[in-house]
Length: 215
Figure 1 (cartoon, rainbow, N blue to C red):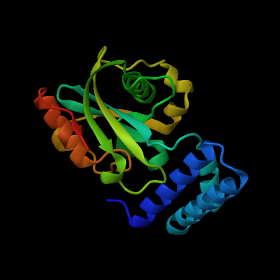
Figure 2: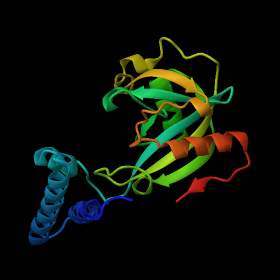
Figure 3: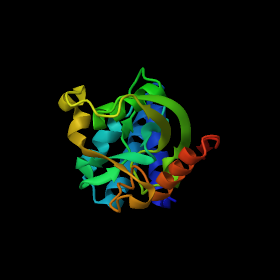
Figure 4: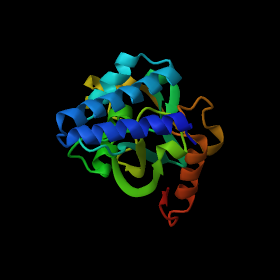
């Protein structure tokens, strides 16, 4: 459960972003900008983040405020799950994934992320879970939904010359390894995936008829 201050800051930021999106009168615009400033100050005060950086992220968010979409691919081979090291999170392990891009379906976004971060070509086959990030993970500046999709391997080996070698995603992740249920790494990137979630995906793998999990 996220702290109340983060809930307040997220709601204030969303209120300001949505209000500014609808072309308010100049006086209302000033008020929405003031609300956004308060939200940024709250974030900076409780996280020790640079307020200018926080304001930059807030200003970059336009349009009606909605949760962001984080996709993650669940790929099994011989009952072992594919995981990648996050270079930007101290080398901790997570499922391949990231933010969905505009004009991508959830399946397309997931298959792309798996390929970019691991080199494996896959086919999306089942929506395993739709999580509210706030209910399962450490606090984050933005509210997000996590879309977890099971993917089947197309071929047993990664492509050595895959396009990810020139992509930002390749720089964000390193080693890709398959782990069995009893041998999961301890150093997980819990802002991205948690141990209970991974164990739940093993249950889905053993019981393909389980329904989609959702909050």
